[in-house]
Length: 194
Ligand SMILES: Cc1cc2nc3c(=O)[nH]c(=O)nc-3n(C[C@H](O)[C@H](O)[C@H](O)COP(=O)(O)O)c2cc1C
Image 1 (cartoon, rainbow, N blue to C red):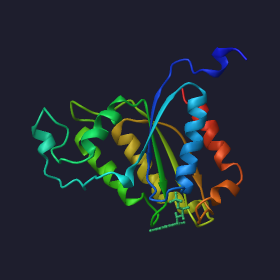
Image 2: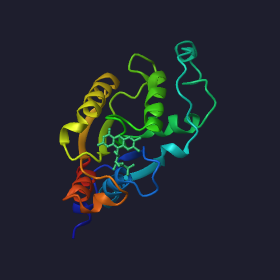
Image 3: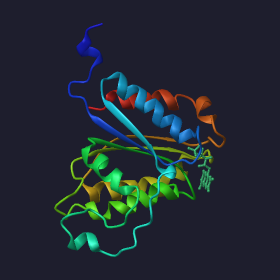
């Protein structure tokens, strides 16, 4: 096979934010499938297990509105995450559905993007984003709230949605392996990133 047909035209930095606390969670498996597809196309993928990070909630101090030197003054693991977010071309949000919404650790990280809002000098405008999610309920409508906030967030942040794979009907770790073509859809999505 010609090298060009395997390698992406321009390698992208893909940052995968894993929202599940489960070692082998369904949303994590989706994310790894996407990563496989993206890596096979020559993209550079980095995954972060967000629940393992020390990320405090945004406290609304608004110091980030006043200082030009640091995005956020809270001294925690976001200090290391901010440069990764800014360097990424594609942000992948992989979350278990928790009470019809994001996992708490991932939501805490999203809240901390306040300091990189589109009206700030430093912002994350122009990134591509992907949503991956798993839920126990077998009704696709269970994702309505998550999809709605995701769309509002992408609009607000100035991101271009690059695809989503939302998988209902998976409860236990590993169930996703038997959820139709969910993993191959995620892998294909990773391979399509451009
Ligand atoms: C705290 C908590 C809240 C949950 N809330 C929902 C929910 O609102 N709707 C649903 O269908 N499943 C819900 N679930 C089930 C998970 O979404 C499901 O098990 C999913 O496969 C977990 O993904 P993970 O393996 O990536 O963590 C909940 C699970 C937990 C632990």
